[in-house]
Amino acid sequence: MVDTVPDDFSPSLGIADAEGLEKESDGHIELEGLPNTRDIGGIRAADGRYVKHARLLRSGALAGATERDLEVLLDDFDVRTVIDLRTEEERREKPDPEDGLEGVRFDDAPVLNTSTLGVTREGGIKGALKMLRAVQDDPAQIMMDIYERMVLDEASQRGFASFFDDVLDTPDGAGLAAMLLLHVLGASHEDILRDYEATNRYVASRTEDIMDALATYHLAGKLDKSIQVINAADPRFLQAALDAIDREFGGLDAYVEKALGIIDEKRDALRARYLTDDPRG
Image 1: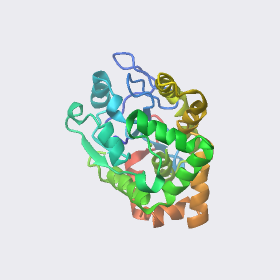
Image 2: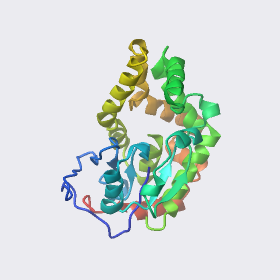
Image 3: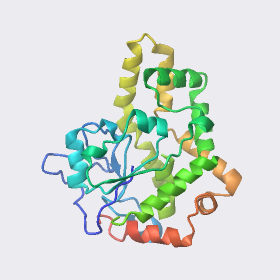
Image 4: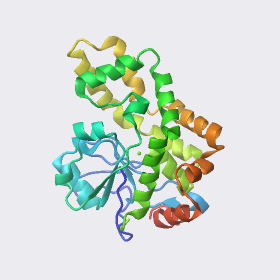
């Protein structure tokens, strides 16, 4: 999810809002039903500048948002656009709460192709079981293969390209998408990896919920490892994508230009919109 707000919107860092929400050093935003929602502002980017705060948020599916969560996104962060990177099947099973985000534009930019990748998270308990059984022999290798295929698959590349167009075209203006965006903005590999791994601090409870649900069907145990692996932000997964990009394109710069159409003009426009000299800005 990427949300953009007007240029003059800049809440103070480290200060809780009126109802006690706090932002951690990794940009975490404490919401009731969206545990892995983060502001990527403050990351050092190109030319010594920083990503602007409260301009680009990343999160999981919004279907779990409570009424108060939606109020926070609208009132505290002035959400204008939501870019959904999920498959059509995932969006259909857990649709975005569009009725609760009045005035927000919802754009679909799927970067997972069900028929190509073969493993998604849709389909309720039966779909989850099918996925877990498919990956249980070597879940880490399966996830590395998925990351590699996701950056090389043409349909996925169209999804990433659409994602960048949406970010750039928002009038007032998450995994691989966040990595690519931060790279284009000029963030270092170390900062990109740190942002990627921050997910692990906030998905643990969700992983436990899935294992508990499977346990009620007497299906946990040997599937627990698979659940933990596929729900993790493992550096090996990201590295598999980067290795594939290096092999096929010669590096990230060439990939974003040739596969995603991020030419110098687009890159400069993105940096002008989302970067600032002020680390607190």
